[in-house]
Image (cartoon, rainbow, N blue to C red; front, top):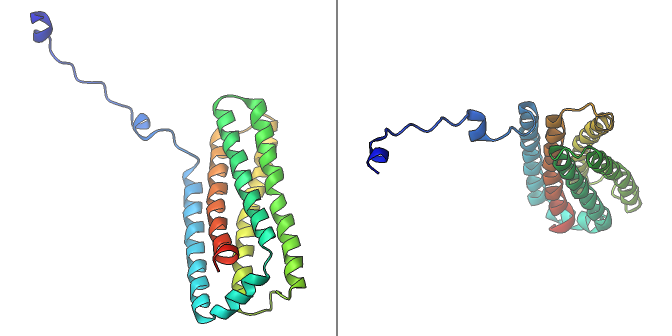
Length: 201
């Protein structure tokens, strides 16, 4: 006991900086892009609320003519593709290459349904006289939803490339993580759009 008490206390070894922060998810450039996306849609949402205050009747009437089924279908597609991307990342981290191939393929196929549903929705809107040359509601609606479709299309193009890379076993895991993060960010924006146009107008 005396020997133990007399022994000098050694300082604890320093914790590596990487261990304190944890593994970096994705790339810095992707996080910058996501922040810019959020900023862009924040401005668009401000325009939405301004237009809604100025002409509330146009928003009530226009929302009633939108296809709630199309809005829910896009929501299901977006969230499902995000889930499949998360499973892809989990499979790659567990070194389950075969499972990762099928998960990312499922994510891509699911994501590709989005532009198809959007096209059918536009046809339905035209049948209900909701053309792009309509009132302020239609203008704001198309500007926001088509803007989101462009952002999602970038994600689909990235998903197409990474699906090929994963199947050829020539990929960087951080790239897959970055794409999954981007898709989740696009998910968040869509859920807000769904709420503003389809659910709580």
